[in-house]
Length: 234
Image (tube, rainbow, N blue to C red):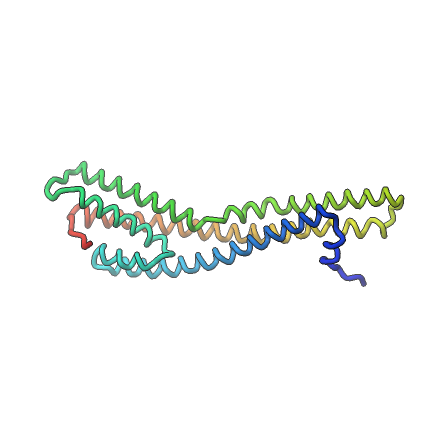
Protein backbone atom coordinates (compact mmCIF):
# COMPACT_ATOMS: atom_id res chain seq x y z
CA UNK A 1 0.00 0.00 0.00
CA UNK A 2 1.41 3.38 -1.07
CA UNK A 3 1.86 5.81 1.80
CA UNK A 4 0.80 9.45 1.66
CA UNK A 5 4.00 11.54 1.46
CA UNK A 6 3.04 15.18 2.04
CA UNK A 7 6.59 16.48 1.68
CA UNK A 8 7.08 14.68 -1.64
CA UNK A 9 3.76 16.04 -2.89
CA UNK A 10 4.80 19.55 -1.89
CA UNK A 11 8.11 19.24 -3.73
CA UNK A 12 6.39 18.02 -6.89
CA UNK A 13 3.65 20.67 -6.80
CA UNK A 14 3.62 23.72 -9.03
CA UNK A 15 5.11 27.05 -7.93
CA UNK A 16 1.71 28.59 -7.16
CA UNK A 17 0.70 25.64 -4.99
CA UNK A 18 4.03 25.85 -3.16
CA UNK A 19 3.49 29.56 -2.50
CA UNK A 20 -0.01 28.82 -1.20
CA UNK A 21 1.33 26.14 1.13
CA UNK A 22 4.07 28.46 2.43
CA UNK A 23 1.46 31.15 3.05
CA UNK A 24 -0.66 28.68 5.01
CA UNK A 25 2.38 27.71 7.08
CA UNK A 26 2.95 31.38 7.94
CA UNK A 27 -0.70 31.74 8.96
CA UNK A 28 -0.46 28.62 11.09
CA UNK A 29 2.75 29.60 12.90
CA UNK A 30 1.44 33.10 13.62
CA UNK A 31 -1.89 31.74 14.86
CA UNK A 32 -0.27 29.29 17.25
CA UNK A 33 2.05 32.02 18.52
CA UNK A 34 -0.99 34.19 19.29
CA UNK A 35 -2.81 31.27 20.93
CA UNK A 36 0.16 30.52 23.18
CA UNK A 37 0.58 34.18 24.19
CA UNK A 38 -3.14 34.65 24.85
CA UNK A 39 -3.25 31.54 26.99
CA UNK A 40 -0.43 32.86 29.18
CA UNK A 41 -1.89 36.38 29.26
CA UNK A 42 -5.40 35.32 30.27
CA UNK A 43 -4.08 32.92 32.88
CA UNK A 44 -1.91 35.61 34.51
CA UNK A 45 -4.76 38.11 34.21
CA UNK A 46 -7.14 35.78 36.02
CA UNK A 47 -4.66 35.13 38.81
CA UNK A 48 -3.69 38.78 39.31
CA UNK A 49 -7.32 39.92 39.18
CA UNK A 50 -8.26 37.52 41.97
CA UNK A 51 -5.32 38.70 44.10
CA UNK A 52 -5.97 42.40 43.49
CA UNK A 53 -9.70 42.23 44.18
CA UNK A 54 -8.99 40.40 47.42
CA UNK A 55 -6.47 43.09 48.43
CA UNK A 56 -8.79 45.87 47.27
CA UNK A 57 -11.67 44.89 49.51
CA UNK A 58 -9.30 44.34 52.42
CA UNK A 59 -7.67 47.77 52.04
CA UNK A 60 -8.41 50.37 54.70
CA UNK A 61 -8.41 53.25 52.20
CA UNK A 62 -7.95 53.96 48.52
CA UNK A 63 -4.30 54.92 48.91
CA UNK A 64 -3.51 51.47 50.29
CA UNK A 65 -5.42 49.85 47.44
CA UNK A 66 -3.47 52.00 44.99
CA UNK A 67 -0.18 50.55 46.25
CA UNK A 68 -1.52 47.07 45.59
CA UNK A 69 -2.76 48.09 42.14
CA UNK A 70 0.69 49.31 41.07
CA UNK A 71 2.06 45.82 41.67
CA UNK A 72 -0.52 44.16 39.36
CA UNK A 73 0.61 44.79 35.80
CA UNK A 74 -1.65 42.30 34.00
CA UNK A 75 -4.77 42.94 36.07
CA UNK A 76 -7.33 45.06 34.17
CA UNK A 77 -9.20 46.00 37.35
CA UNK A 78 -5.96 47.26 38.90
CA UNK A 79 -5.19 49.41 35.87
CA UNK A 80 -8.73 50.79 35.84
CA UNK A 81 -8.55 51.56 39.55
CA UNK A 82 -5.19 53.32 39.10
CA UNK A 83 -6.75 55.55 36.45
CA UNK A 84 -9.73 56.31 38.67
CA UNK A 85 -7.57 57.03 41.72
CA UNK A 86 -5.37 59.38 39.69
CA UNK A 87 -8.47 61.20 38.44
CA UNK A 88 -9.75 61.59 41.99
CA UNK A 89 -6.43 63.08 43.04
CA UNK A 90 -6.60 65.61 40.21
CA UNK A 91 -10.13 66.60 41.22
CA UNK A 92 -9.15 66.96 44.88
CA UNK A 93 -6.34 69.35 43.94
CA UNK A 94 -8.64 71.53 41.86
CA UNK A 95 -11.39 71.94 44.47
CA UNK A 96 -11.03 74.09 47.54
CA UNK A 97 -12.44 72.92 50.89
CA UNK A 98 -15.85 74.36 51.69
CA UNK A 99 -16.63 75.47 48.13
CA UNK A 100 -18.08 72.19 46.89
CA UNK A 101 -21.69 72.17 45.62
CA UNK A 102 -24.03 69.41 44.43
CA UNK A 103 -23.38 70.39 40.82
CA UNK A 104 -19.65 70.07 41.38
CA UNK A 105 -20.11 66.62 42.91
CA UNK A 106 -22.14 65.46 39.92
CA UNK A 107 -19.53 66.89 37.57
CA UNK A 108 -16.82 65.03 39.47
CA UNK A 109 -18.72 61.75 39.13
CA UNK A 110 -19.16 62.33 35.39
CA UNK A 111 -15.45 63.01 34.96
CA UNK A 112 -14.62 59.89 36.93
CA UNK A 113 -17.03 57.75 34.92
CA UNK A 114 -15.53 58.94 31.63
CA UNK A 115 -12.01 58.21 32.89
CA UNK A 116 -13.01 54.70 34.01
CA UNK A 117 -14.83 53.96 30.74
CA UNK A 118 -11.78 55.05 28.77
CA UNK A 119 -9.54 52.87 30.94
CA UNK A 120 -11.87 49.90 30.40
CA UNK A 121 -11.77 50.37 26.62
CA UNK A 122 -7.98 50.45 26.75
CA UNK A 123 -7.88 47.22 28.75
CA UNK A 124 -10.35 45.46 26.45
CA UNK A 125 -8.26 46.50 23.45
CA UNK A 126 -5.08 45.27 25.15
CA UNK A 127 -6.56 41.90 26.06
CA UNK A 128 -8.25 41.45 22.69
CA UNK A 129 -5.27 42.49 20.59
CA UNK A 130 -4.41 40.02 17.78
CA UNK A 131 -7.68 38.09 18.13
CA UNK A 132 -8.75 39.60 14.82
CA UNK A 133 -5.89 37.73 13.16
CA UNK A 134 -7.33 34.42 14.40
CA UNK A 135 -10.70 35.37 12.95
CA UNK A 136 -9.07 36.30 9.64
CA UNK A 137 -7.14 33.03 9.61
CA UNK A 138 -10.28 31.01 10.28
CA UNK A 139 -12.22 32.66 7.47
CA UNK A 140 -9.50 33.16 4.84
CA UNK A 141 -7.24 30.10 4.93
CA UNK A 142 -9.85 27.57 3.61
CA UNK A 143 -10.27 29.74 0.52
CA UNK A 144 -6.51 30.18 0.16
CA UNK A 145 -6.13 26.41 0.26
CA UNK A 146 -8.99 26.01 -2.20
CA UNK A 147 -7.27 28.42 -4.56
CA UNK A 148 -4.16 26.24 -4.45
CA UNK A 149 -6.26 23.16 -5.14
CA UNK A 150 -8.04 24.73 -8.11
CA UNK A 151 -4.74 25.89 -9.55
CA UNK A 152 -3.22 22.43 -9.08
CA UNK A 153 -6.17 20.75 -10.79
CA UNK A 154 -5.88 23.21 -13.68
CA UNK A 155 -2.23 22.24 -14.02
CA UNK A 156 -3.20 18.57 -13.96
CA UNK A 157 -5.69 19.02 -16.79
CA UNK A 158 -3.05 20.90 -18.72
CA UNK A 159 -0.74 17.92 -18.36
CA UNK A 160 -3.55 15.64 -19.55
CA UNK A 161 -3.88 17.73 -22.70
CA UNK A 162 -0.15 17.67 -23.33
CA UNK A 163 0.17 13.91 -22.81
CA UNK A 164 -3.08 13.07 -24.58
CA UNK A 165 -4.06 10.59 -21.88
CA UNK A 166 -6.72 10.82 -19.17
CA UNK A 167 -5.90 7.61 -17.37
CA UNK A 168 -6.03 7.48 -13.59
CA UNK A 169 -2.27 7.04 -13.41
CA UNK A 170 -1.82 10.40 -15.13
CA UNK A 171 -4.56 12.34 -13.35
CA UNK A 172 -4.30 11.03 -9.78
CA UNK A 173 -0.84 12.33 -8.76
CA UNK A 174 -1.49 15.92 -9.81
CA UNK A 175 -4.96 16.05 -8.27
CA UNK A 176 -3.79 14.48 -4.99
CA UNK A 177 -1.00 17.04 -4.78
CA UNK A 178 -3.50 19.83 -5.36
CA UNK A 179 -5.95 18.54 -2.75
CA UNK A 180 -3.24 18.78 -0.10
CA UNK A 181 -3.66 22.58 -0.25
CA UNK A 182 -7.32 22.31 0.71
CA UNK A 183 -6.51 19.95 3.55
CA UNK A 184 -3.78 22.32 4.76
CA UNK A 185 -6.17 25.27 4.62
CA UNK A 186 -8.69 23.43 6.78
CA UNK A 187 -5.97 22.28 9.18
CA UNK A 188 -4.97 25.91 9.71
CA UNK A 189 -8.51 27.31 9.87
CA UNK A 190 -10.15 24.89 12.31
CA UNK A 191 -7.84 25.52 15.32
CA UNK A 192 -7.93 29.27 14.62
CA UNK A 193 -11.74 29.32 14.75
CA UNK A 194 -11.87 27.16 17.87
CA UNK A 195 -9.38 29.29 19.81
CA UNK A 196 -10.89 32.55 18.54
CA UNK A 197 -14.27 31.57 19.97
CA UNK A 198 -12.63 30.38 23.19
CA UNK A 199 -10.65 33.57 23.76
CA UNK A 200 -13.56 35.78 22.69
CA UNK A 201 -15.72 34.18 25.37
CA UNK A 202 -12.99 34.66 27.95
CA UNK A 203 -12.55 38.28 26.90
CA UNK A 204 -16.29 38.86 27.23
CA UNK A 205 -16.16 37.41 30.74
CA UNK A 206 -13.24 39.66 31.67
CA UNK A 207 -15.09 42.67 30.27
CA UNK A 208 -18.13 41.85 32.40
CA UNK A 209 -15.92 41.58 35.46
CA UNK A 210 -14.40 44.98 34.67
CA UNK A 211 -17.87 46.50 34.36
CA UNK A 212 -18.88 45.07 37.73
CA UNK A 213 -15.72 46.43 39.35
CA UNK A 214 -16.31 49.89 37.87
CA UNK A 215 -19.87 49.87 39.22
CA UNK A 216 -18.66 48.84 42.68
CA UNK A 217 -15.87 51.40 42.61
CA UNK A 218 -18.22 54.22 41.62
CA UNK A 219 -20.63 53.26 44.40
CA UNK A 220 -17.73 53.26 46.85
CA UNK A 221 -16.49 56.65 45.66
CA UNK A 222 -19.95 58.21 45.78
CA UNK A 223 -20.52 56.95 49.29
CA UNK A 224 -17.10 57.41 50.86
CA UNK A 225 -15.45 60.15 48.80
CA UNK A 226 -18.11 62.43 47.37
CA UNK A 227 -20.52 62.24 50.30
CA UNK A 228 -18.21 62.28 53.29
CA UNK A 229 -15.06 63.57 51.54
CA UNK A 230 -12.44 61.74 53.61
CA UNK A 231 -8.81 62.70 53.02
CA UNK A 232 -6.85 60.56 50.61
CA UNK A 233 -3.27 59.74 51.40
CA UNK A 234 -0.89 60.58 48.60
